[in-house]
Length: 275
Image (cartoon, rainbow, N blue to C red; front, side):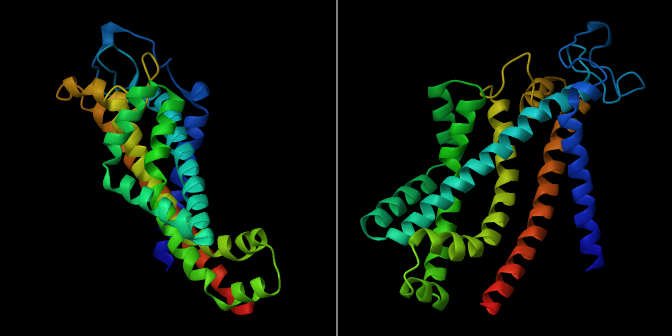
């Protein structure tokens, strides 16, 4: 138990450091992220450039910090949007049932059957590149796991005695949803959200890698991977640094989220037993 707590605290410390570094990037970057210096192009890590430089002589550390602002904010925003949308659809489907449940369930099945990346590519290609088209693509393709989980859990909780008692006592549907359903859905949905954050962070990187994310001179971790690929043998840090950043952030969020989800589950069980 002590080892697990230590890992969780280490993950929280690393994630906090990463968020602070990315948020304060304009203040802590040693160089401007788009400042070119061809005299030091593809330089290895050293005192002047801690992570080396890219093919245009731009400082890799500065670009990792600057690119993390887009990658992390996009993944976080997409996680929130997909979680909220999927939860609303799943709870509405379970509560209303009938034709609405059938329609939403079939829509969910269709989207789950389609490759997420293909649908996201189609949406971004139709809407154009940038923050909002990319967020829309990730939201449209990412809400389905939340909806299916929320619907299943809402069906289960709705059949329990305390929900039936609240319904018999004449409690309004909104009270039942916010007082009884959502607290019991919070822990599983939080665990789902942490897993989805890592997947969405990778999806953001993949779309940017394909040129459908940010556009030059702005950078993010996916576009950095694409730009550094032809020079991987001469300057491997150009690929290692953004790839490692994606891995570390996704891992830390997953560890922290799993711990928080377990605590929320224990709290909800105690409240139910007390009720």
